Each structure stands twice: as C-alpha cells, then as structure tokens.
Image 1 (cartoon, one colour):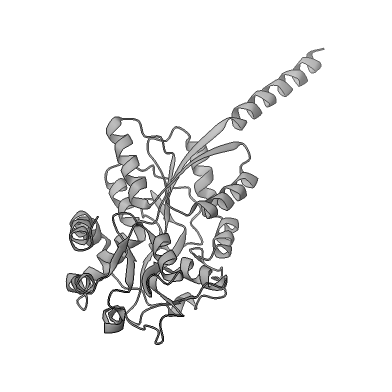
Image 2 (tube, helix red, strand yellow; image 1 turned 90 degrees about the horizontal axis):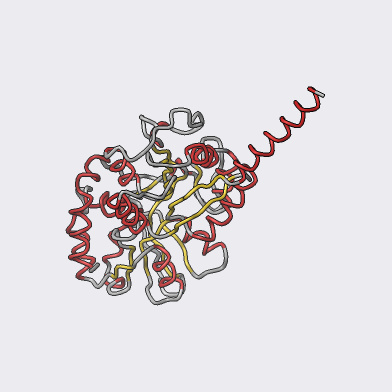
Length: 326
C-alpha cells in the first residue's frame, strides 16, 4: 500500500511540475523582422515547448523607448531583449539593467562578440553597405563617396538612427572616420538624400525604383536579390559598419529560467544555422555564411571605439535629425 501511495504521489508531483512548466512565460522585445521571428520562435518551441513567448517587435529605437517608459513607470515587462544595437546594450549594462549570465554557452563565439561581464551576447553579424537598383544604375557604386556623385543626386535613401539600431552604429562609425565625418552627411543632405524610418523602407524604395541607391543592412538586400528583386549590394571599398544583434536578459526579469533558456537557444548551433538560412552571417565560429555572401574574412570592417559611440549617441541622433528630419 505504501509503495502504491509513493507511486501516486510521484505521478501527482510530476503532473504539477508539468503544469507549472506549461504555464511558464517569456516576454521578448526585439527589432528582428516579424516573419523571421516567427520562424525563430517556432524553432525555440521545439527546444522549450513548456515556454509561452509573448513578443513585442518594432524598430530598435522604439523598442528602447518602450522599455525606457516602463522603467520610468517602475513596471518593466520584458524578460529578454534582442536588438541590433550594442551601444544600447552597453548603456543598459552601465545602468545595471542587465542580468549577468556567466554560464552562457559562448565557447564557439569570438570574445569580441560578447560582454566581458557576460551581460549581453552577439548572435549574428549584420553589416551595412550600399544597395542599388540594377535597372536604374549603370555603373555600380564602389565607395561610400559614390553616393555623392552627380548621378546620385536626389536618388539616395538611408535608414534613420532615430529608428534603426544598425543606423545608429553606421552613422556614429562613419562620423568618426577622418575621411567622412559630419561633412559627408551634410553633403548627402545637400544632395537631397532622404531619411527613411527603417531598413525595410529603404529596401522597398530601391526595389520599386523610387530611389536608385540606398544605405542598407546586407541580408535584406541579398535576400531580396536571391528572390529576384532588381537590386544588388555592395560592400564599399573603405569598409562597412557592423552590428552583432546582441541578446540580453533584463535584471528585472520575472522568468529567469525561461530567459536563460532563450539565450542558450540563441547561442546554439541550431539557431545559428537558422540565422544562415535567414540570410545572416553567423556569429558562431565554424559555420559558413549564406552561399551568396563573400567570405567574411574578406569583408573590411570600419573600426570605432564603442565608448565614443556611447558617449556621442544622443548628440549624433540630434545632428542627424537636424540634417534629415525626425
């Protein structure tokens, strides 16, 4: 009889544990495109079926604004943040808003891709270069300065750092290069360059022929080209800017186990291979990029001190808005 009750008790406890896990939730704030995130969460579900994910998706700046408003109200909802802005992650870490996760599986990731104090972790490499409409452009651009050629006047569009995290890094990095600086952006503004709300709007304008040239993140242009869109992509000769789309756990998380599970997933080989399928250069070493990408080792990256970008983030956004509008 005692053995029977022991078995029944074990079954009951297992049922309770299963019910608790089945009701486990995760609130995710992200800037990654919605269609991609649906596939990401579908794959995550196969790894952690007990976790129910609630997602808020918007441009990086709007995600951060929402988070800032919640901080101010004393009621942050997000457990995990996945955005294209390392500078924002650095600021959040400095403000003690991120939860250190020293056990995160980073063995196959370059040390430059994650925070030394293990508070945020780069998940992929996203560069910014030049997209152009192949029906409208006879001589493909080779340099960032080609966007200042007479034939490009009034035909350039770029994402705004007031909305896009990748644009924050791009503008901030180019401004710190001696051969560019703010004078480069002033000349673009004088030549009628247009600022768009995000990268998707840039691709749409160039693909439709509304603009001949665009400043755009690589995977959007190359994915569109692979699907037959009349666009092509250039890694300018001076070099490109890049973000690693870091993932982090908020210090105020109410679901730390689920949050760590999602970070583990993002840093897993399965998620990294899915990133390749979605057109990204993977952050994990030993995994090849999409076949239509050049060898990542041949892509020249423009260097900049992250501390400088962090210090000048707000002034840079204001200066950009003064030149191109909000």
